Amino acid sequence: MHIVHWSPGLHFPTRPRAVALGAFDGLHLGHARTIQVMRSFAHRSGAEATVLTFNPSPREFEHGQRQPGRRLTPVDEQIYYLRRLGIDTVVLFEFPGRIHAVEPEEFVRDILVRQLSVVHVTGSRTHRFGRGGRGDLQMLHELGAEYGFGVETVSPVTLGGQRVSSTRIRDLLAECKVHQAGALLGRPYAICAPVVAGAGLGTNLGFPTANLRLPREKVLPGDGVYAGLSGKVRGGDYQAVEQPRPAAINVGLAPTVRGDERLVEVHLTGEQCDLRDSCIKVEFLRWLRDEEEFEDTEELSAQIGRDVERTAELAGRPMPEELLRFNDFCTSEYVIRRGDCAG
Image (spheres, rainbow, N blue to C red):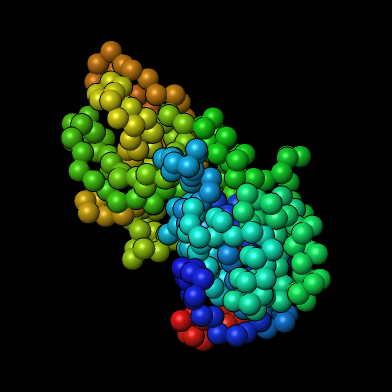
């Protein structure tokens, strides 16, 4: 897969391209469905399967300022999941940037048609594009008819009678409902981050923890204790996790022993391994309890012991079917295998 950072003068070799448009934050089941529809057209027609998206995401901004904790999938995670979905090329538009001021008609004429040689565009019915979000799917249909490319609107995916959306996932995570959020993603909500040195408080309590250096933009679940899975990540491949094992995860301030900084701390059950200078993947499966402030560290240690036992029980079960559905959209079959995507 090729990653291209867009600029007005960027040269793309002339070849037909099928394009999916969107912010695609989270790469949830609705996004996966939209991309699958585009990819299917690309395979049938021999067009290059292409995703156009943003980095940073427009969702990260408020009143023109980039805000922390707004993104479900930072760009490296997003690229990883797009690779699993069988995309040939990802075009990243800087936001805000030059693309921010492009009128929708110019976006279609100058970028989609002249620069990218688009033959087919896929998007959700809620997608907006161009300056001020003035462009919509109706406009895209009209311009497609004018310039000779097809437009396909993908119906939303619904679960529990509600549309799957990034906003709904963020809301569920804020409410500590990580299992429900994972069902909309089709996989457990996860954090991939390097381990940093801590104060050794977990070790002193008998439960050594890995403290994570989190991407500033990453959405965290609400404060509390969770059962999940964790393991070392090999070579930046978020799926290649060495010996994933049940993990008790604390998100929050750790009020009994710290109380001044929001952190993610992970205790892997079983035989301990050296996680220093490692990157680990942490998957959230179930909420266990709220954070609590205990009278002393002995009471805290006893509660952590109970959390670890419950974690081993929950995370030791087979992965629920609803947390495996993203795999149904994944493929290793690409349309374009040449290395001359853009120059």
